[in-house]
Length: 264
Image (cartoon, rainbow, N blue to C red):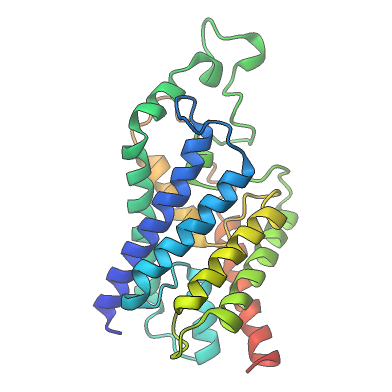
């Protein structure tokens, strides 16, 4: 695979991943959406299908890493680091593009949600629903959850541990079950396995932090949230932003180490 193929494949694939994954979060969150309050099952399966679609689309070009934690794990497994920056650049750019497309697709819903007094507070709002009641985490605006993750209980070591554990499960599944014949990305069957693993992680381990398990998935959309001209959008919670970046990278490296010791 050439560097240009890798960059284009990862950009397109990660954009699709975030468009569909962030899209289900928007559908469930925003007040004027037909899927409002569809619940956690909708989110977990939406993200699983997002992974499936993104992998099948981008695998022929880049091997469909779509996740810096997967890229670093494969680099550790193979000892080949030369394309890591290209993969990461495509993943971050793709995540930003995907997040911007979610905003376009739900433009009217974002506006309706963020001008609703019961959501953002203000004169006429009910006393129990002021101060951005849907922003339960310090520093997070009322729609940040459409773009990025946040913890239900803000304890840094636990939040890191949750992301590390979830990412180890994901990356071990990719390395043992999902890679193509060349071992440099996901194969056809691996795409389906990985999508089901993502659903499983969301159902079993997603409750504490929202299961980023992917630095690009969290950081790229968080940057877009900070840049978009959304009314009353609130903060982007940069104080937490390091957790869903560092945790998955650690988890990916640990998973690669486990693989090299136990399976290689």
